Length: 353
Image 1 (cartoon, rainbow, N blue to C red):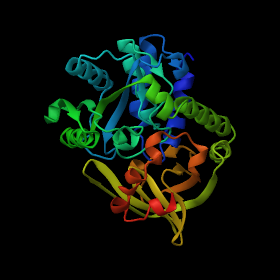
Image 2: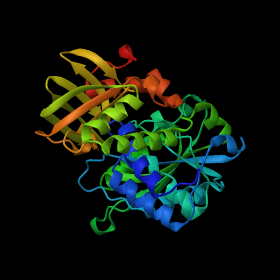
Image 3: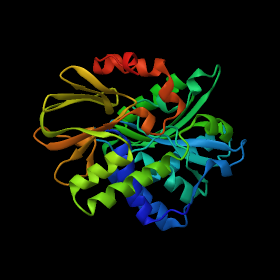
């Protein structure tokens, strides 16, 4: 499928929606996507077109979207693939994004355009998630798997610029990259986890980018009528519901360890988040639990807004849909990874999954 500026517009808003509160800034996604499309022809390939033995790398960004000193440029994404190939001697034959989000859905576009690497429609996950291992498609369960990860980002003027390469256990390597993001001011671009296409065919969120584009198209079709209709169109497409709409009466956000952690309360409905929304409760009754999709929209404009952009006093709309209505990678079925959420948001997770 040949990508164009209209599809980019759909991917940005659809990715933000499927980010479930995280997935990065659509402004960064827009900048990267426009550079990629201006550079030359860009095609989104179905993974069925890729031979099983072709080596595929995951493109990602890691960090806390609300960090005050975050600084990431499109060039950083390209640099990570170069660093990975320089340090491993491997030749990347395709690239996928780690997840959907305002920036994340566009991960891989600029690398594909500039480095002439096939861009493949098979994200590690069809929604956003907080940890790199959750987007590892189950690689953490393969004995002896060595994770290669390259990262780049930070503002040179603030002396925050970092580049690095790490290989090792996927948990340890991901933790090192997370610390790299902290030292870079909050955010780094990453290229990681080189695997054969056959593995992704079995464990990835196949056609997850297409799903984001379709979601965004439904949003804009509704927006042609009204902001409320835009939200309704998305809810209908995702087989979800509007849970609550109203004033943000309470909002807490703390950036720690390279993550944004907090909670949002609207008309008695409480959402916790760890970058992405993790739980939704109404009067202490659990209604939705990650990896269910919970998402916020600005009531006046209808546009999706991430947890990093929520403010107390905003009027917002909260929608949600069950996990079976979105495309998920293998990492979303790993109860050990989901249990990591519990001490972060102080809520039970596994019990409700």
